Amino acid sequence: MKARSRRALTCSATGALGLAAAGGALTGNFVMAHGLAAAGAATFLLPTLIRNCPWFGPIITSFPASGREIWLTIDDGPDPDETPAILEVLSKHGAKALFFQIGNRVLQRPDLALAVMKAGHLIGNHTQTHPVATFWATSPHRATSEIALCNEALLSVTGTRPSLFRTPVGLANPFVHAAAERAGLRMVGWSANGFDGVFHDPERVVERIMKGLRPGGILLIHEGRLPGMKPGTRAKTLDRLLHRLADTGYRTALPRA
Image (tube, rainbow, N blue to C red; front, side):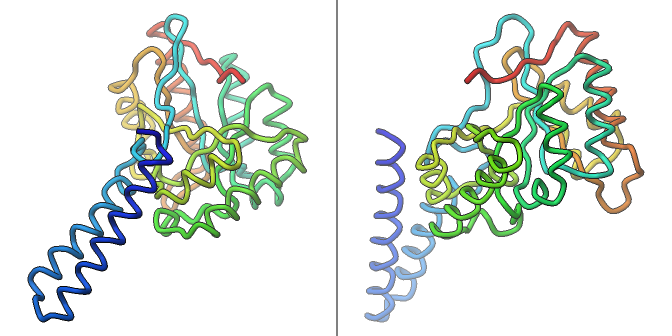
């Protein structure tokens, strides 16, 4: 079954279960109504709330590697404090990265987005405003707008239209998948995550990533400071990660068009 058909089936089943629940409530059968309502919600929410779930559409979480290659992905930039230091670390190690950048931040600091491109890295779409708390429940209109506006921001600043998209925190409902598909974007997830939004210690973050390391894997780290995070932590984490990758024979690669 194709992803578009799965999306349609899920929405139809959710609606049918919701109508059946309403019917049960109207007839006074509240136990049945609650059960049907819960089943309808679960039908829609389970694939939405599982990170990198491919039920509503394909998500790239690995790629055919030539030896010990990985994609290094860096989310949430550009950031005036972190991006320059991150670019220095990448240059020092001769590494390449795929940056998933936020449209309004690109418009605020176009110089940093251009610096990323000029250094030979790639930039993907990470929505216009990064509505991390609510995007999993977004409407069709908002999903389309967030993706389209970020595409426009990246094109206007870099002259290049992105071909890859990552949803905030890896959660996506059917409307997000449909909007990305209409925009001609491939959705990218990850296979190894250091949870650097939770853990600030570089060693701990790198160890978590290394546990999930495999050829053809996609690594996730972030830029941008968090409350309580010391300046330079992101760059230090990246530096240690690249040292560990080199020590184990891994090298970075970029997605092919």
